Length: 402
Image 1 (cartoon, rainbow, N blue to C red):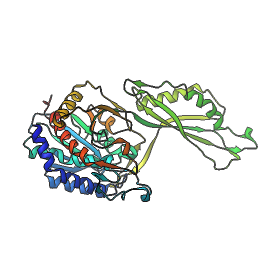
Image 2 (cartoon, rainbow, N blue to C red):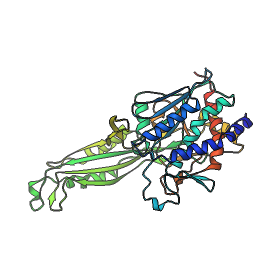
Image 3 (cartoon, rainbow, N blue to C red):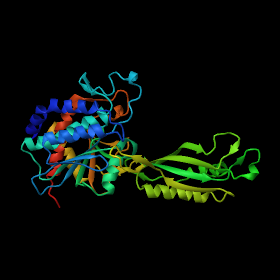
Image 4 (cartoon, helix red, strand yellow):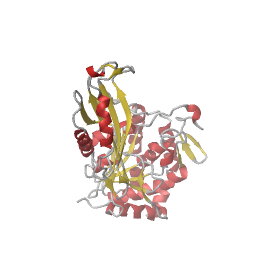
């Protein structure tokens, strides 16, 4: 089987590289993914997917049906990219998809269009090689991951296209990833009474309450897990309702960046911050409330909704059966050991894992290049990644359906 996988990967190498370059050439910033979604849909149809659907939010799902009796597998990447910034800072045009020096260059190459090209071809190559697995393979290309993890959040919220396993294509350098810290943004709104600063006795200053709150926030007990250690929380932004410096504000808004590990789910985080507020006691004329930040958004298809400012945490054990199986399958196919790591960045994985999907991450892209002006992906690493993806997908999708 190993030689078959390598042969089919080599046969389609140029097609996959070309597809990655074409994806990069489409500027698909968050909530502006329409053009790249159309490209992906046409590519799936041309490759011969059994079913291609676009949900009402604009995410694209392609299904290759298995022979029957096996577990289903999702291959997940996101279509959107962050802004490229000043093109003059780039070695190659950020949307050029330039192939040079053994790499494909451009915004999204490492996050996640290079890996998306591999995922698009993975179930098709297995089928062509006579290795169609027993379970269905769903290639999932989602919107708005960069700003809210929204595409996968909407999918899982509605319990659509959920599978037994999922492989997330965020950068892992051809290692397996078994965890990522979550992130949420908590907002504390402190409301008082505005007045002229020359007569503070006529108002109620929210900053008086803030002075009590900051020490209490420092006492919040952080969750922890064996992989990431403790969660972290820090104040990152404070806004006043007044522009002038001679006015006591009617309201102060405090933003808290909370990096989640262990048991620190969204509800737990909000409860911990609310407990800190409760410990502050009363400040006459001042009230405070804590909320997890959601924000309005409109998808490229015109759907209006709310985005979550962050991602859910994700962690599985290195000795979990599907991790052990995936590692063994990839190592057998590529001919050398691979590592097991955790992502430093937040990913969509937590949304799927919260629904009971068994997840892990795998990609030839390099995490250090994500969101940088050196954004690129190694073609040599992609070659190995194709073989790894074929072996990994076949192994999981051939597990008997329970």
